[in-house]
Image 1: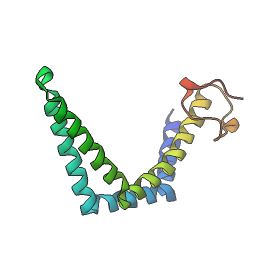
Image 2: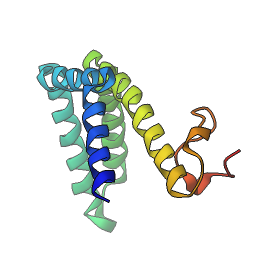
Image 3: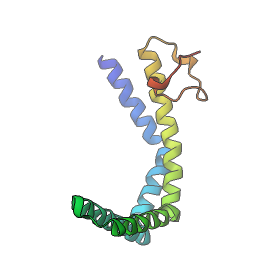
Length: 135
């Protein structure tokens, strides 16, 4: 087992050295430093808190106010997602997730006794619960 854990650590270091990981980290830092994006995220969180407070009123909640708050929340969310820093982060994170999902799928295949060399990125999502079987 020690050898497997050491190999997993080596894989972890290799992931962190990969350009997709580095790009994701750089994009996350840029997003964290983007004052306009952080202001939008703050506004989003305040809207969400207002929705939660109104929902907590139970039967006494104001349905018109809830609709307005939800519309405002969706509008702020759209602005957050349209922000250039957020867009760059999401794109980088998606690429990194593809790699980490593929790694997980290969490990799951091996743990199930399947040949890891049979992994095909176009046919395996890595989520075996929805899988119809490998090859």
